[in-house]
Length: 292
Figure 1 (tube, rainbow, N blue to C red):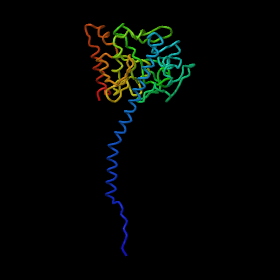
Figure 2 (tube, rainbow, N blue to C red):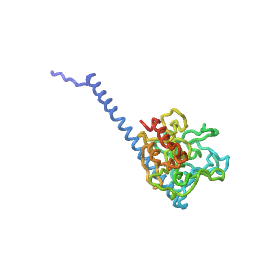
Figure 3 (cartoon, rainbow, N blue to C red):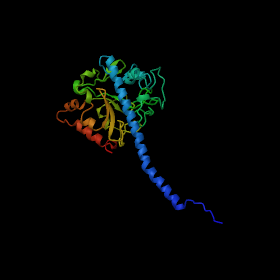
Figure 4 (tube, rainbow, N blue to C red):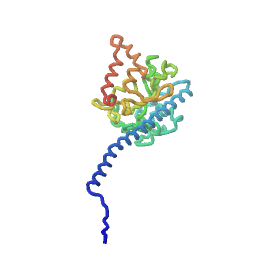
């Protein structure tokens, strides 16, 4: 009688199959990770675009005046949910994310930011305590109001080249601080940053922020690999502009090209040493995030 034998994998064949699977995984996993991050970049660009348009629509309703970056009605409102910001002023046009202005309740959120929350942000709901640069400790998460995430900020340097002060101001206990004005003041709205990505809890950012080092959680500190501006892992960041368009661009070039609308004025303040802009660009170039 003829014997019937079953065919089985040898140990060598099994090891070869496992090796092939491991090689394919090593090849494909980085591709999947890149595809996932590319999707987040697209989502972030959409957020910046919509927030930028929200600010522009707001301008149209108030004679081209820009929203204030922050509003503090009383001294006791600092770093509480009774603070308001440009996010509150544009929320009626955006209607996506954050908490409504309330009675001062401190929020400790980890989600719910809507399009105010960047999908690539390292720590949009970082804890507010400790605050920094001498500010008193505070509890809560997110930006300085605790009601929104930290991801995007208005450019509080825009307007300096034209009028020697910002066109985006802030109201502190009844006093207008830091400028204020109309978007029509700008000479180059298509190349002037309106909205910037940020790691800090501040609702505004300024020209030199690109050169500041921050922890991924948004704490300014020396010796860090990351900037206080949130990067996109390609030496760049995504910005919204005063004409309504948004794009990813090299972060250091925003300084050298003066997309912040600030350095022409700043250089003129020291005619004997008009190198301030280049010095800031050189400092920014030393941050690993902007050179890797």
